[in-house]
Amino acid sequence: MNASSRQLLDSLSDARASLPTRTLFGLAMGGLKVRLARSLVTLLSVVLAIAYLSYSGVMNALIKSLVDVGSEEINDLLRMARVNIEATRVGNPLDRWLVMMALLTCTVGIANAMLMSVTERFREIGTMKCLGAENGTVVKLFLIESALLGVVGSAVGVAIGQIIVFVVGLAQFGGYAVTHLPLDAAAVVIGLSLLAGIVLCLIGAGYPALVASRMQPVEALRVEE
View 1 (cartoon, one colour):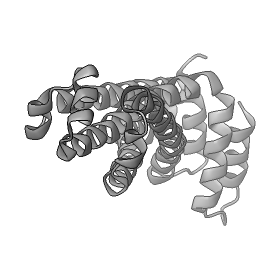
View 2: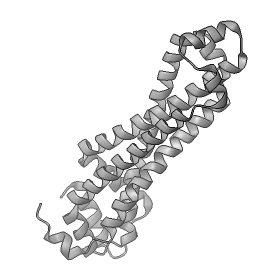
View 3: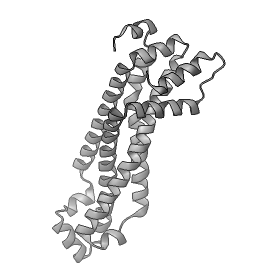
View 4: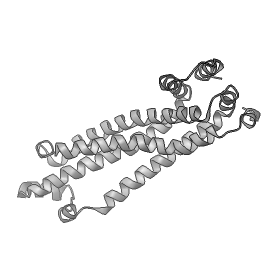
């Protein structure tokens, strides 16, 4: 049993302990550190999905802004970058489809990682519940772990996505990528990307958290590690 588990068990052994959210955050951090390899795999899936989402949204906003300018020099740069100017004006459904698939893949990956985390912690969860942990406490613990992954993964993903936007934009459109970047639209995309990463992590962890909370202590303790 890891240090995080022992800390939770010590808290549960005290009938007066209320296990505030701050304590659960500390326990969740400890759990992520103990399962570092699996946490990194889950984190990477979030980073890649959010990086693509933020890159796609900001780059599309930049291209639309350049198309709206309509100067011959900018149109030449757009054609060299193989941008379909007419399709950009009406919106490209393929971009939306790719973003949806990336987010769906991210959600499935998170759910799979969290389910594996539940499987690895059968005895730990059973012992917690034997000592009085309520279903809500177990659910909170798993959701907090997933939310932490969502916050960190989304922040890193957005940063990577914007770095790619900057590099690709300068390479394709030169200084126009900076002067014509719609900051308001970029801010909206970044905000939505951060929110999407956190929400997807919570959705992906929802079912595993319910599985963990409904586990019967006796059955969990019978599992051989």
